[in-house]
Length: 199
Image (cartoon, rainbow, N blue to C red; front, side):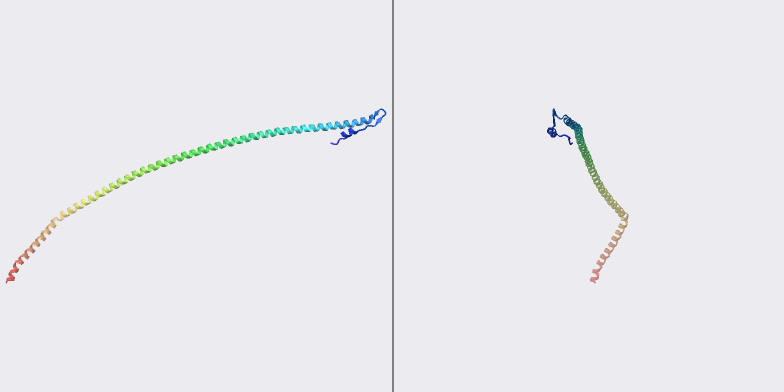
């Protein structure tokens, strides 16, 4: 702002003298200009003060808003942190529960498999024992059938021999009779031959 009267001009201002002192009109004119200048200065200063107060008020509002934003940001960050922590804890708990559930299911499945294997072993043992008993029974049955077959064959042969015994006896007697006659003839010829030799 350009002042119409500067402090230097005020200090260096010289008034013309009259018979009875300074010229009253010049002094009044200067004072009038000085008063206008001071008034303008006060108005400008008042405006600047008002502007400064407005700026300070806005600055204070900005600082208050900034503090509020910072507090809200801190609260939001704390909330997000707490929420993330809560979520992490919940996920950890769920993971632990899931691991325990899977371990329990695995243990149950293993116990079932052991029971199935034990049952299969028992079934295998019973099957082998029954198979062994069946084999033994089959062996005894085969031996029995073989014994029965031999007995029946012997009985059949005996019956066949018994049926053919008269025929065999007749043939045997016939053979013996023929053989006896043949021997008798030879003996008779043996007696005659020396007599023929002597003659």
